[in-house]
Length: 230
Image (cartoon, rainbow, N blue to C red; front, side, top):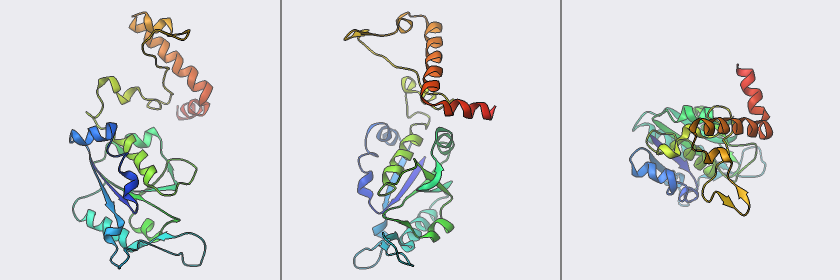
């Protein structure tokens, strides 16, 4: 999979894309991630990528020119499945959407900044808008890092068997079960007997019961959504 991220502040993406599982995916050759600086596509003396909005108002808007030039240059080299714009107005990122995106081959992720982007960018270039929540960030870079992490970890071969994404919360509409490790007792708190029993059937049953209980306690909306789908 190849992911091209277009940003006016690429430095914000340096650490998230060079550590942990995302780094492992790149080292294994399973994911290619390229960050493109919008200022490289601005041709004035000051490398300007933003301007004031027509009609007045506060904030600055990312200009269409550098964005069009960057994305068109990328598209001239290969076909892309999606051009994603990280926006609080987009569809909510969830595991179902992440699973779908993980099956694509090439993605462009556009990061807004300041007040947003010129609307013509959204009309002519963007194929999907995605939000990571109902709040506003300074820019789309942190949201893009979240998207990349969620997608890349699902690429076959990135995680080993013990880290399998199939056991993650939300994969089947339920939250995950409680996890424990050594020691069996810590400050008077004990690991449940079921996990120490060595009985795989008993362990599996306990985990499923805990997942259902935890989902009922914390996210009843997930159970309601499952009922509606059925």
